[in-house]
Length: 324
Image (cartoon, rainbow, N blue to C red; front, top):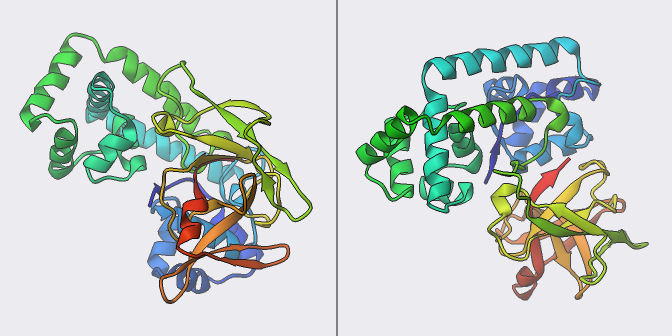
């Protein structure tokens, strides 16, 4: 499951609602020390944990992100200082050159971020930060990346050195620096989304008409418009997007959210997904798992549990990316 780390307002909302740290720790099944690191933005959450936090604190996912308009100024400035510090360390360590070289070689081989991250046994977010030059790489990780790129480790190192010597990485480093500044501006925070690698956007249809029951109608002949597909989904088939036109998940997501759907992905507990009642009518559900390991769906306003049969699992389309 994708891991997420970000400047957050979890502590503020926890205190507003009078939720002790221990209660949040018990809710997530982690230690008090882990909660402290999570609230400071130093420890990662996964998507399921992030949803659990929003549910316990009765707020939307978007409310958990720091933003320059509504967050305490000292929190915003502290995070910016931390990013600047990390950027200087990374530049000194030559991580920008490594990241740019990996990106150059990956794209020249026609591989996607998700393909390399999976074969290197990393989460997508971790590998993406490596290519952005914002994360150090261990010897084991370097070997795994080389294997994912189908290259011996020494050959990969030599290739990156040559690209650097030939001046072929300067544009990529400059481009990464620009993207890094944008991605770390809290106004652009999102869950799971990664910007496109170039300006040749791939467009996908956007749907979103609700009915009285809070279901979402997906009419293949009635797309509202087309929208740019996130880069980590660009090589997937049948990607489409929906407006959040239902409040049956309560305040979990902003009503401005755009959800990108990947029908080919298998859902698991902690995901958000569309469940097709028929060819055009769907329910947006938070996927859970009971004590027997059986998946079911949950939504609110009013509360509703949706049980799945084995045949129903083919009718569930995973929400792969959420743009808040």
